[in-house]
Image (cartoon, rainbow, N blue to C red; front, side, top):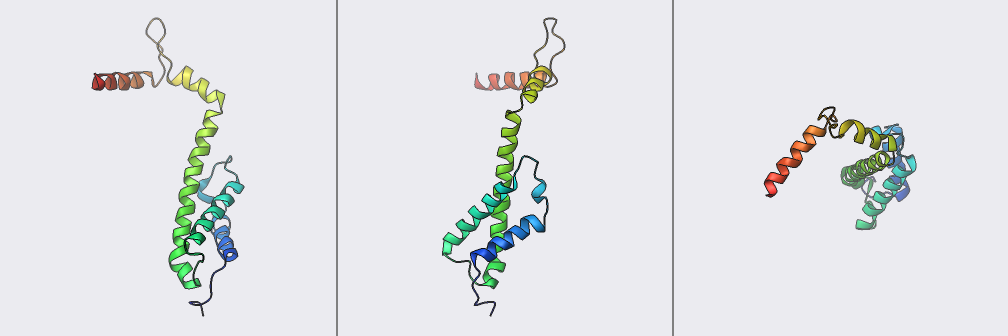
Length: 135
């Protein structure tokens, strides 16, 4: 019976929603700016991709043995990618981060050659090393 009964798209959607929202209420340690609707879009997109490969999910046995794990891994991979994109966008839109970077981290030394930023010497050394390599 379980080898013959075909898995529906609705069954897969419910399974993935349980996997990412019930089993893991805060999926993958997502930051506050990552919206649940983004996860739902990623889940739906990956379900469609998997379904379109064979126009079916197979039997319950095939789904649980092969398709389910592949689908979960694809969703996690895409969530991680989207999380990184949103984090970079979030940082770029914060002007106080840019001020901190420019005035604390990478600030060049003053006229007396002192009080440089925390990362200024490392960046300067890296730049000089790269300049030597290219010359």
